Length: 172
Image 1: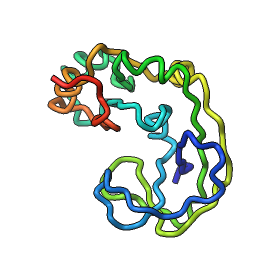
Image 2: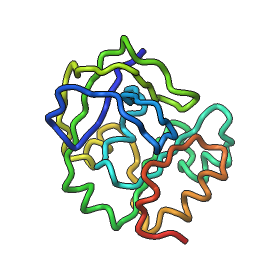
Image 3: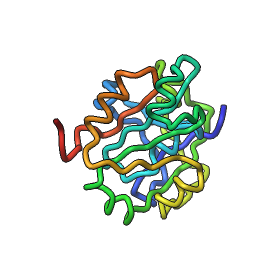
Image 4: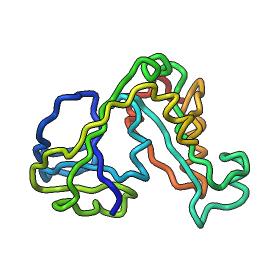
């Protein structure tokens, strides 16, 4: 298992206690974590809405061309331009968590949960989130409105994850 992370704008968390998360339709109290492969989707302030997408084995060449400019290895994180200054000014903290009590959550890629409280092994401050995307080779796509793109993405053969989309400033 790769490292497990929890990302927060709070840089002073000494212990993660299980809690309910209705956004993931989980009434059970859990500690949530994301693996190293998927943690870049959390290089954002918590409430910032974003759509992330990438190719998998079943993604058609047509969708790779249409959404990923022909690059099957490309990963895209898309946000609305209204949120750009929020992203530019943000810093977040990535907490590396001990994997022993975690198990994979459902079929969702990269999500893990623990029913027990955990203390972080490490905390890493992440600033210059735009530069961090560039250094990781992740395209940060800034669009005037996310919904038109998002509707096309979810209707495609791409793998995707939409986070905090309820916070979008526009919806057509």
